[in-house]
Length: 431
Image (tube, rainbow, N blue to C red; front, side):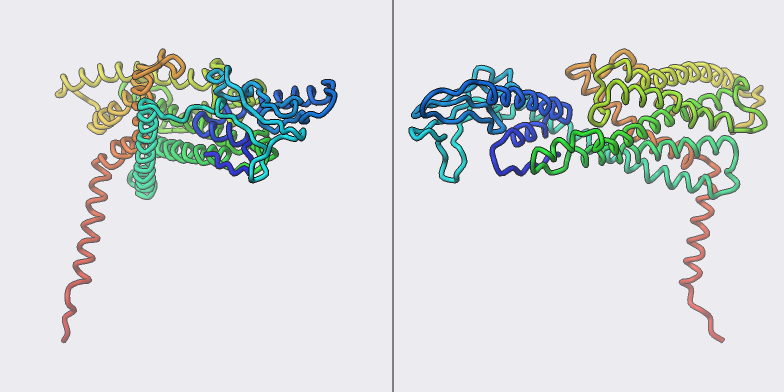
């Protein structure tokens, strides 16, 4: 997060350290309020009439605005209104001493003496705050392990599907695209986190550095990462939608399937997300162009992304219920079943994933992040992070490693390696 090294006890130190806890939104808002506070102080310095005789000069020390002080007195001003915790210290004051010689009293190191103890935020960490911090660390470890495991299994599963010619078919092509969407989703989440940390984690040495960090130019990288991540998340959901439609087409009715062509699925999985990501990007650019686009102040813009995900989840759930009914009837009349056996195996594998994809979205369809509080919010966050990060691993296992054809090929490959290794270890016969 923010690493601050300032030579003076200025406002930068205070609210940059506080931003380490509350995030970039508070940092940006605090900076804008500080600019306003500074401008008002400058107006007071320029236009207020000067007193007669000896006095300590009015000044702005980048923390508080000081009026002219009479010699030999303590000057009190209210805590600065730009502080993020101002509501807690609104009755407090910050002090300076005006010497008898008309100069502000300095400390031994040459800095002007100032007592701002009444304006500082309490640093005591309650047990609840400590528990929350530990919980967030645990959640981050959870999804880091999940995405790492998913990436490893997905990449190896994708290599298996693409390298073995016997597995080349429309069904596995759709599986391969689903794997790619999961890989891109995991990578985009990791890159987005890296860009956010890079954007908010730079060192602040002076006010110009802070202004540069909060500028639109500096946020371009993390905004683009945010856009790519939203596209990958949508693409991932719509490839699950494609899996559901393919299963429905195979077992019930022809929807997009025609002579084993999978071009419609390509358009659905990779093209449909563009219809929603581009309007969302324009809305953020024109109406909510702040920091890294990670905060949703106007939830109507966020629903541009959320609605198609919920729509796909609901359709998947309906398809799941319909196919489950068909499968149950087929199994009951097993002797009269005319479908090839692979279709039932495909159904069992896919039916394991469709509820995994759709149900958790449907459960929290009316429980958004803004509406959920307390333990319900933590439960929602846990299940969302767990399912999203480990979902790729489950996809690879169910669609690749549990496939009987893949198991046979891998078994033959390992047997060949064992035989080859054993042959190399046998002693060579000499005449």
